[in-house]
Amino acid sequence: MEPLNRARELLAAHPVVDGHNDLPWALRKQVDYDLDRLDIATDQRVRTHTDIPRLRAGGVGAQFWSVYVSTELAGPAAVAATLEQVDVVHRMTERYSRDLMPAVTADEMETAREQGRIASLMGAEGGHSIDCSLGVLRGLYDLGVRYMTLTHNDNTPWADSATDTPAAGGLTAFGEEVVREMNRLGMLVDLSHVSPDTMRDALRVAEAPVLFSHSSARAVCDHPRNVPDDVLASLPGNGGVAMATFVPKFILPAAIEWTLRADDNMRAHGLHPLDTTPEGMAVQRDFEAREPRPRATVSTVADHLDHMREVAGIDHVGIGGDFDGTAFTPDGLSDVAGYPNLVAELITRGWSDADLAKLTWQNAVRVLRDAEQAAIRIRARRGPSTARIADLDAPPA
Image (tube, rainbow, N blue to C red; front, top):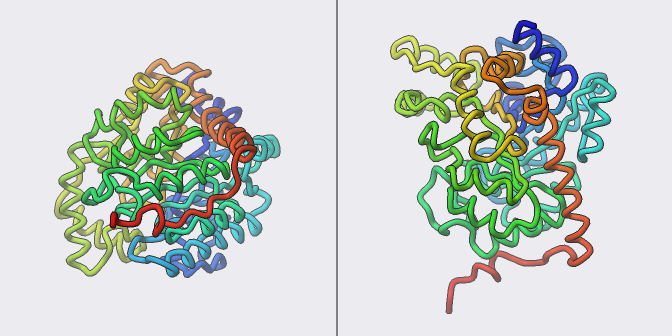
């Protein structure tokens, strides 16, 4: 059978669990959360990477929607914006209930697949979303958030980011308590965006599997957002999963320098480098016309997955595209309809059906189930933490 047809057949049985999609932030920036003005039941390719017809075409069976807020928001403002992101995911799954099913457990993911619906989960991108409060963390869990990325592009007071100047040397004492409380809840600790020292500290403290919701291999592309080999090699001992991302500047070495220049151009126009509104993309396209960008491809992503499988093992890899969170995408992976192209490429590289089923569906479902089981054991030993950052991270007298 021709690889693309075989890929579609495999995805019908073992659909993609994608670890990270920023459609909620696109809804905030483009239409102020008005779902009538950006109806994802119809083709929205001129505005977003994501809509229901393309999710269906791409063989997506479960999506972690990122309830991301920019680090330009802090304190109570970040918490409020995160709650607005959670709200739009709830409204989206209710509005499109024929296609989307809210899910907070591995069993609910499986039920959605059996019903032919797309399981809709949530992940909070950045520890600034909880304003250093374990009570807020528990509130997000109660609202359905099932992972939290410990940082975004900037440090939190308790954890170092991959793209900021190190301040804590990894996790502070309070940061370790955040990890422990997430484990107690059954919320996956997401280590995308964090520094290597934060990754290693979290793995040392963790009592449950961790997640990299959208990160690739640093040995293949030396960008700080990627995962070093020693960390990948530690995943079998932890049980975690690293989900390869599609963002060109994270996967293609030649794209790193070009993206720095493109980011400077966005700032010169008074725009945030991550602005993917139509206005922001017009500026990006004008820059690209003047300075053609190095182009990542499906093969570029497959190179990362080959390496991640080799180092971490087939039970510890997944997919986290970061659609609607990036201005540019690889050729063949321009939107959420492109996953069959990636699976077809892996088929041509000799990946077995069993390996592909683990990559697309089984590993992500298993890691959430393992976190749930760990939480049952941990809750039998201890209750909610009342620790405060002022107590655990107080400066020495």
